[in-house]
Image (tube, rainbow, N blue to C red; front, side):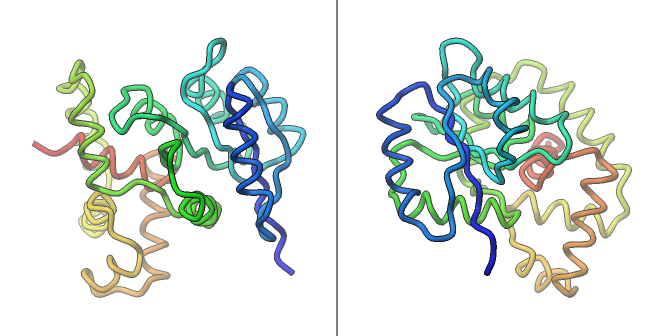
Amino acid sequence: MTAPIRVLIVDDDALVRAGLSMILGGQDDIAIVGEADDGSRVPPMVAEHRPDVVLMDIRMPDVDGLAATEALRGTKAPPEVLVLTTFHADAQVLRALRAGAAGFLLKDIPPADLVTAIRKVAAGEPILSPVVTRQLISHVSTDGAGHRTERARALLDRLSEREREVAGAVGLGRSNAEIGRELFMSVPTVKAHVSRILTKLGLNNRVQIALLVYDASP
């Protein structure tokens, strides 16, 4: 049997934690390994319980989800982070995605969609549609946009022509299968290209590739 997906819930609202626990606790393939009410508790709990996925509230009074996500980025084999928020357009969410979060969920997400999202993220699939990516980025401050564009283009220039094509497709929210059909390559070849892109550019996941492609756009 496949081991269950280990989930750590992080939210300062006890009712939210209870609701998430109730939804996820009934799934045979998901195991809740711990709960935290502040971001400061995340690194030690991750070290102790080794979750596969962290459901991370973005706004907490002491150490927020952004700081906690950034703290996890430098650890060995960090878990996937799904940011929890009440708003589509939140500058902190964008910063969390740049810090390595695999995506974000609205707190009013239907229970079935929450379960599906956790399964997808645990399997290495980001939870962020291209439409929502554009909406999120368009609502945040553009301070430093010129610098980000210059840096993004310099990074993409490190890639081969084929890798840039794959990165561009990732930026459009394409799945591996869709990229394979569009670029006439097998899914394993697409996966290999994505892996090389992440390694070459020092990125954590496909969401960061998408954000980099967006930054490099005119």
